[in-house]
Length: 456
Image 1 (cartoon, one colour):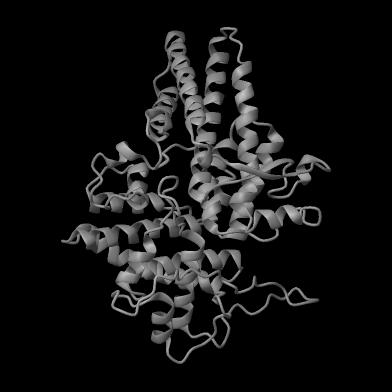
Image 2 (spheres, rainbow, N blue to C red):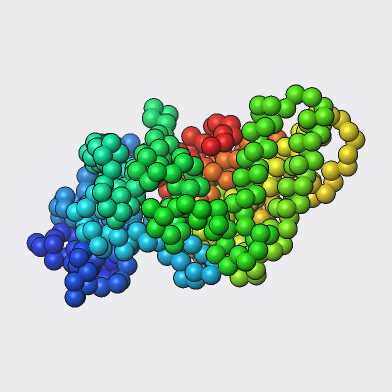
């Protein structure tokens, strides 16, 4: 695997350790270390057929790149593809933004570095059509799983070591998301339970992700999850600006609808609760500061028939965001809001109370338009270049960082399964999910295109 650096494309080196210190800084943070990010975009091309034949090109790393360098470049590629450093603590929590500092402390030969590298190897094995990278990732994965199993049975004594192992477990879960396919559905929940065992917390996705995302120590969860919130903007100063509690209420309503609702009276009570929650979601959107809201930078012109629209090319406005974390929060809100409206309409139809739901249908149009307008930001390397070249490219030609697809896929999966959504739009979203696997290396995205909504 080669990675684009500031000066040249990486090749082979006689002294790999020297190169690592120059690019990463000294692992022990001794004098001479650097704070320059190690993240580099992988420049290894997609493996394609040889010109004029049906024969695929050789599936090997460039001959001048030794195995040690491959691991080094994979680590660089991981940081580029998955780590979002927040440039404003008031607006964004970033995504795995603190991971790079831990890598500098632990060194490039640590289990944490290996876990990052195997995620990148698996991702590029898929997106570049290079199975040898996937096989290399699988071997690293098996080695780290064996080590992690011991750690779960005998947790590390110190908090720092516990945090490091918890991060390894979460990265193995991310690997499961990347590597998932029809023969091997994702087992990332297994790793979530492992993290919970080591940290002594409930196996809740929000709690476990908060451990990685937030400013709190991994071992100091306690009430921090509920006080700050993974999906609550850091700038939030009131309950109207907190999204996490609303998602928790929605989860409760969803579960009750699927398990305990039997009589008309119970359905009416649940429908009224759902409508009150819909009002709370509306207040959340209105309460967000302008800096946290999306900005419209252009538009896509409709042409042809809907099923011909390529990924990112659905007609309408195109928005950008402060960063991927902020975009992910907005789309989590949108998916939740659309799911809730879908549920309200279903409950109302069940009791046939004749209620006018024009306001809810207006919400669907508004929220869905905003989600569609976010797709180029999440999936394209450069939104402005994508807009500039939209007349010549029917779909996104230059995929962006994988974190963009990662933070969009579950929201898109939910919306693509709602009956209130136009079937053509649902089909387009499923096309986007399949595209995420082929171009961003996220295997689970393709699986989600073919399954119904699940709640965890």
